[in-house]
Length: 184
Image 1 (cartoon, one colour):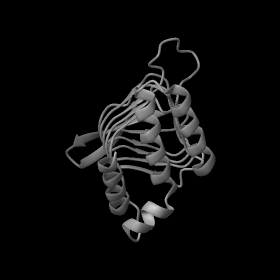
Image 2: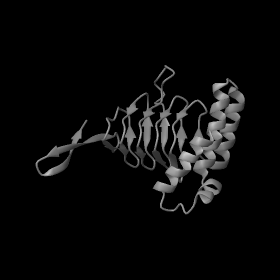
Image 3: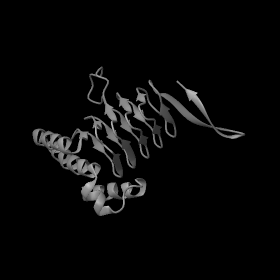
Image 4: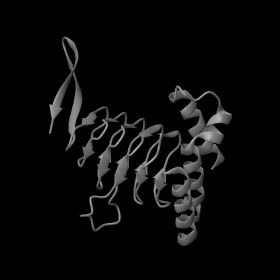
């Protein structure tokens, strides 16, 4: 657990220009507090202490404004920047080096009956403020999701998703350099 928290703090130091030092990040960043509480509750959840795990996650939500279900699986190097209103559902899987801004929901559409009803997020992903990533979809590596986008379909690696519903923008090499092509 401490190894993951160290990686989270290092990632924040490298990616948040407001972070001045590691002590400040550890003591004052709700992102770190929520992730510490998540890692404790996730450990308890895996040991099938479901009530205690949920109690800790709800306590964390109360103090940080960040709701992370203890059943979610989260990698290392996570930054939940200005995290108020972030919701991460039970079956969500998040890779490494992911930045999540305020108001993001990683949840279900409500139509799924299977357990895996939340998204899987790859590595090196940035999810903009207010974005909703819903359903059992896959978000590839090196993806950017724009603010307030509503993503309801898979997003391939190295793409950007913007709009409501989200359009996927892929980089396309051409003779004049990089251009962006819109795909549905």
